[in-house]
Length: 358
Picture 1 (cartoon, helix red, strand yellow):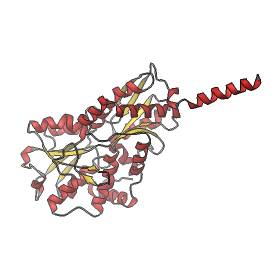
Picture 2 (picture 1 turned 120 degrees about the vertical axis):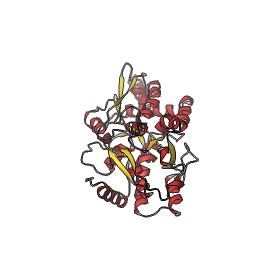
Picture 3 (picture 1 turned 90 degrees about the horizontal axis):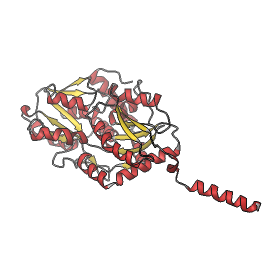
């Protein structure tokens, strides 16, 4: 009899251990706060609000997923809040952007958050598209040859994701004044619409929703995309605007030769960090594995959902979304920006904008 009882105990224990970890998590009746460290209307905000209803659908217990915008410090405020206040209970998640990653990579002393410790749920590659005011007489990138009119760009800061446009503009020989102090790309676009600045860029989700209408009204002229990565790691045209040259092509159009050297090496390295894995959802350090798995399962189911696939194609540019370990492996590449490229870029920022990066 004792042997039978022991066998039953062992069998029950084995059955318990065989249950997927995600079945242990239950968010019934809960509200999950998704911190987005930017204002309403920008690319990160649009991205999160597209994903949120699907996480409500697929997380165990169907919790409410509420997006909380927390702009400030080029996204450092929201990142630090998550780092210091979020508990590992699955009720607080963080949505990072390239503008959040860059200060971390550049070892900004104000940054407290540490991506190497967090649990990534999923990641979204994204593109960026630059556009200009029609009254400047520029219709295509070809018109940038010898272009000398002063330009103004609404920037979140020289160490934010704006490294990509600011360095690109500089490489193309444009005289662009960076107007610092804007809290996100949403306010930057509004500044463009109001005539406060005359050149801008948006990540693709915000570009599709907010800039294409401006182009149809002839209030903006698209210039170029930053590009997208093909399967071999080459920068190619962005699928959102395949008729526009990518940044390396734009350089070749303006100068008649392919870009190379430390400026382009730095630009490409941070392009990978800022756009290859541009946006990601994170859980805090020490989050239990059953909660992590529940989120990753929800992300996997979301990405496979036919309705969501239509949204990816229409609003997120059709880029392949990455869940779980695929996201982690991709972000590991971001954490490995070559030190010489990082050093060159820090020197350029400090010299160009007279600011101390570290």
